Each structure stands twice: as structure tokens, then as C-alpha cells.
Image 1 (cartoon, rainbow, N blue to C red):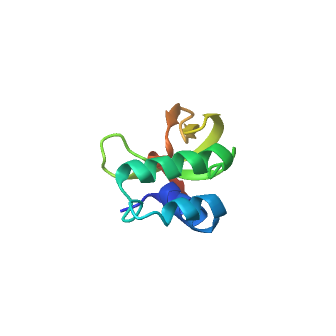
Image 2 (image 1 turned 90 degrees about the vertical axis):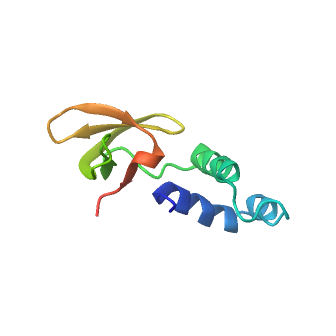
Length: 101
């Protein structure tokens, strides 16, 4: 199952001229994990799916579900600092975040 950013990245790649041309290559489909990671990296280089101040859900480290937080900053291409309701801050990557439902 794809996460939120992977879904956005695939949709972008299917409509971006160069990316769609690359996806049309015989060895590009079905998407390997490495190809998907490349697409996500390219997407994140020019898009920010979690802008500062956005309310998000963050995957709990023990895998037991999600908790709410707010994006504080984006220190790197695949790095966001979140702040939980209790004021604690932590770094998370795209696979651990999704928009708040």
C-alpha cells in the first residue's frame, strides 16, 4: 500500500512530461521499490506536501496507530519537524506523515 506522498508523487510523475516518459520505459512498470523511491525523491525536491503549520497525523513509533501533530519546519528534502500536543518536537520523514483526517 502506498503512503500519502508516494500517491502524490506517482500522480505527478504520470503528468510531468519527462517523468511520464521515464515511466513509459519497458523496465519501469510495474514500479520497483527503487523506482518508486526515485520518483518520491524527485517529487520532494520541488514539492512540499506538508507546509509549516499543517495539521498532520504521525505514525507512532511502535506501529500502534497515529497521533496528531503540527508541522513546525522542513529542515530537509524528506525531513519535517513536528510538534505534538504536549509540545514535544520530533523529526519525521514522508512515510510517517499524512494529512489530518
